[in-house]
Structures are given as C-alpha cells and as structure tokens.
Length: 295
Image (cartoon, rainbow, N blue to C red; front, side, top):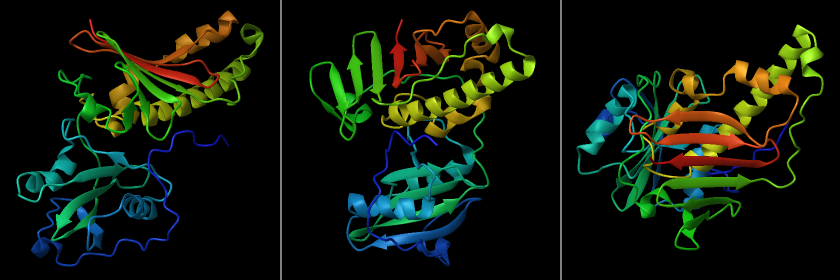
C-alpha cells in the first residue's frame, strides 16, 4: 500500500483520553440543532497545538479532519450547529469536519473561561446541494497562505512541506507538489490489442490511482489554504459536485489506446461562471499541480 504523502494534521506522541459525553449540553449553552453532541474535551488554558491535534486524532482515528471555511457554502445540517454560535458573543475559534465514518463528525473549538473546550457533534449527514464552483473575488495572502511562509514577492512554501509551493502571477495561482522517489505510473503496452476484460482491469487500476492522487492534491492544495473557493473541502470529494469536471473514462481509454505516455494527466478541469479555470494535473511520476487562472 502506498504511504500517505501529505500530513496536514500533526500527530502528537502523548496519549489523549477520548472525548467525554456532555450531559445536559443545552443547559451549558452548546446548541446542536438536529446533530447529537457526542463529547467534549476541556482545557483550563488555551490548547497547545500538540494537544489540540492529539485530541482530534484520538477521536477521528485514521480519518482526515477538514477545516470548515466560514466563507464557503454552508451545509444546512452543519449550520444548525454553527449559526447560533456565530450569532453569539462566544463565536467558534475553529471548526473541523471528518467524513470517513458512518455519520460525519464535527469538532468546534470555543472559549471557555480562561481556557477552551473542544465540542464534538455527530451529524445525520452533510446536505448542501451542489452549486457552481466559484473563486472568491478578494484573496488575502495572509489568510489564504496562513500555513505558508513567503520566500519572495511571488513565491510561498508550506511551513511543514518545503516541496509544496505556490507561485503567484497577476493572472495565476500555481501550486506544485513534488514527491521524490515515488514509484512511477507504469504505462501499458499494446492496450489496443488486449481483450475487453484486460482493458477494463487496466482502466480500473488507472482510475483508482488517479482517485488517490486527486485526494492527495486536495489535501495539499485545497486543505492547506483558506477562503479561496466557495466549496468546502469535503465537497471536492463528492461525485455530485465534481463529477462533470473529472477526467471521463472514455478520455482515459483513448489515452491508453494511443500508446504514448502523456507529459501529464488532467484529473480535474473546471471553468467558473466568471471565466476562471481550475485545473489539477499529475505526471504520474511524483509531480502534481493545481493551476488557477483568471481571464
């Protein structure tokens, strides 16, 4: 099994007890709507980064926590939980969602006296209806590239992954990620002369590979930034949202039948109503990129 390339949540070495159930949660001011409060973890002072991510990882297991974007589309089930808080004096400091489980789990970080509390909610589902992809009109580097350090007027490098970079031009935002030593994608020979069963098996293998690569690119390029798109991080994974922008199976079959390994494979290609293009590519040899181009 291929190793996980991008790690966006730090894993602490210390053991952290699971979240404890909060009885009478409503009386404590923790609104839930139709969601169910499954537990909370208190801290007498502000959580350290290590402890915060240790708590998240102990509850989330092997899944990936995705940070909710206040500027993004709001899933009604999630906003039932967040709206009352956003209208209160004690607004959420951060919100994360994890979907690799039977019911989505939400973690909300709130102030509690001199300290903080991390409250966990279980949703019945994430229920936003698909909307057209948009790029926010105003992109503030200090917000968008919070997890990056600026090394020149136009270039940023991720603080934890120096092979994850962004280059800005007046018309483009160009993300690149290079993984040295990755096993290259093997291009089959004689695809056109294979049987239907053999062709189908190879196409399925390629699609599985590209699905994995796409998920890694989302973690690297989308989940490491803030307030770029109107889609929340989890919307990018859903077929009803991304389906018409992903590489069609017929296109992949045509590439394989051509018998020549292309310089890159375009896995996702969208054009917004405002005319911007959003393209994810991989070369199958450890290099991937996201190019956002304004008209």
